[in-house]
View (cartoon, rainbow, N blue to C red):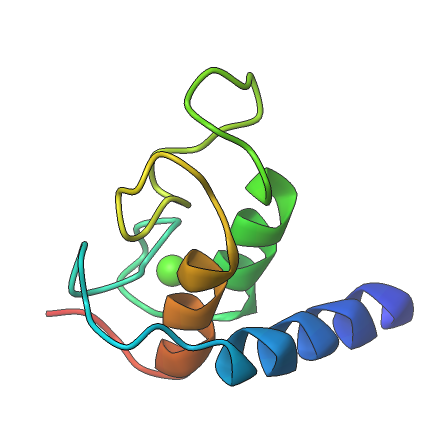
Length: 87
Ligand SMILES: [Ca+2]
């Protein structure tokens, strides 16, 4: 668990460094649908990371910007919204 937390924190930092310039997808990156942006949402993007729509691990929810690939942009959206909620 400790390594997972460190890994997620590192992932979040990398994502923030590569933050996308403009919103192209969903306004609220609540991947698990609980109304809050938490480390669980970050973890779900991490699990689906580098997948495309043809991959069994692909997650529509984790593809926050609906680009067809779960990548650093999606991770950045979740990382930037950590600790916030959705209406
Ligand atoms: Ca959530």
